[in-house]
Image 1 (tube, one colour):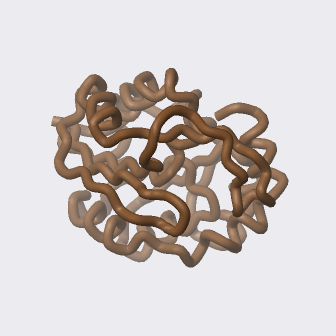
Image 2 (tube, rainbow, N blue to C red):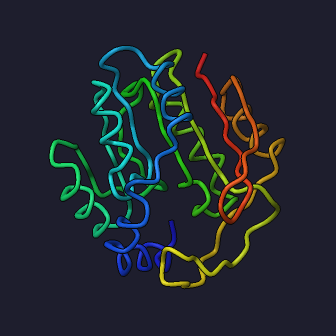
Length: 199
């Protein structure tokens, strides 16, 4: 994640956490959890406010939340006292191979330059155990676009947009098998959600 984006999340961390903490993707979370073994280890990639880490804890999983924004990790620790959180950039993951049964990547890929996505997916493939599941959610569209981010004080942020086939191809090139992919209407954008498996 580039420095400007991390700085924006640091600056608006409390506001962003307040906006997002109760906005739960319940259907996607429940489906993801159903594909993870009991007490499984889950990585919440770009955990933000810690919202989904709390959800995983409620279902007796063992989540680790990481985020490049130090201030968002502070907010997450305030909101989810029993959660485990680390400041870590998605571009520099220092996690062992075969460490997790699932990786939850809700929106984080949107903030990574598109030319770096393939290497990140390959790293995620490596840190998953056999039959591990990856959930990825991104905005539908083309190219990388500057958008005035509502949850970051309308600061202009460079965001990556994807076509469904484009995202699926990147995942397949990384070794994943696509279990399910679909588009979904959101408040401001259409979203692509993909469940992919390490086989």
